Length: 336
Image (cartoon, rainbow, N blue to C red; front, side, top):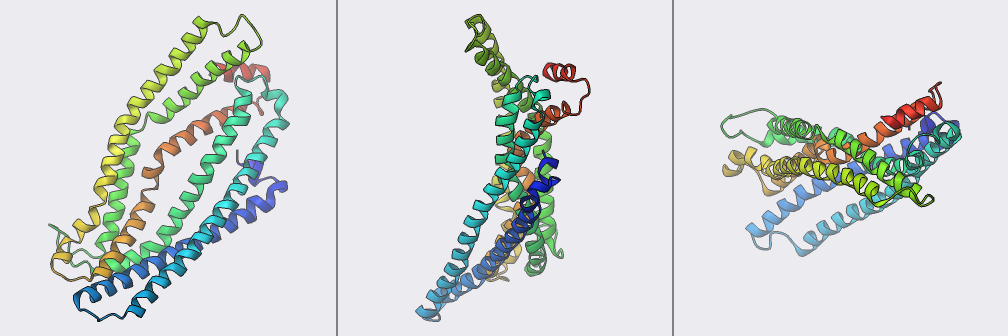
C-alpha cells in the first residue's frame, strides 16, 4: 500500500515532490484562514462602531473592508480548487502504483478469494479515502500550528471562567479537554465498528463470488444458496446499523453541545462587557479552528473505520506475496 508508491523510483516525482507541494500549499491555505480570522475581528469592530454611533463609519470605508475579504476569499477559492485538482491526480498515481505492484504478483494472488475485488475495488476505495482523509489530517495539523499560538494570545482577553475564576490561557486548555473527551467517547462507543465493517466485506465478497460464478455455471447461484448468502449480508448490515445508531447519538450530541462551549467559557467576560464584538468573533473562530483540529478523529471516525477495514484486507492480501507456501497460504487467507 505504501512502499509501492513512496519507495519506488518510478513514482519519485509524485510521491516526494508531490507531497512537498501538497504540504506547502496546504500551509498557505491555513495562512489565508488566519488572515480571514483577523479580518472578521476588524470587520465586527467596525460593525459595532457603525451601529453604536451613526455615520461614524463612512460608506467607502465599509465597502473597502468588504472588498478586502473578497480578495482573500477569491485567492482561497482558487488555491483550494487547484490543490484539490492536484491531490486527485496525486492519489490516482498512488492507486496506479498499488495496482501495478499487485498485478506484478498476480500469479500468486489470483487464487485468493476475491482477488479481483481487492485489486480493483479496495485500491479504488483506499485511494478515495486517502484523498479526503489524508488532506484533512494534514490540514488539521497545520491549523493547530497556526491557530494554537493565536488562541493562546487571544485567550488572555478572557478575564475568568464560570465557577473557576481567572485561568491563564483558559480557552486553549478547554479546547484540548473538549476534543480529548470527544475522541475518547467516540473511540469507546465505536470500538466494534472496524470489526463489523471487515466482516461486512467478507459476507459481501461471498455473495458476489457466488453470483459471478453463477453467470457461467447453471448449478451455482441457485435461489436457496443466494437466499442464504444474502441473509448473512442482511444480518450483518442490520447489526452494523444498530451499532452506528448509538455511535451517531454520541457523535452528534457531542458536536452540537460543543458549539456552546466557547461562549459559556467567555460568559463572565461577555456579561462584564470586557470584550468587543470583533474580538469576540475572532476568539470564537480561533477556538473553533483549534477545537476542530483536535476533533479530527471525532469528525473522521466513520471514515477511519472504513479505512481500517480496507487496510486489514489489503494487508492480508499482501501477505500472500511473501508467503512461501503459495496456494496453501492463499487458501488459508480465503478461509480467514
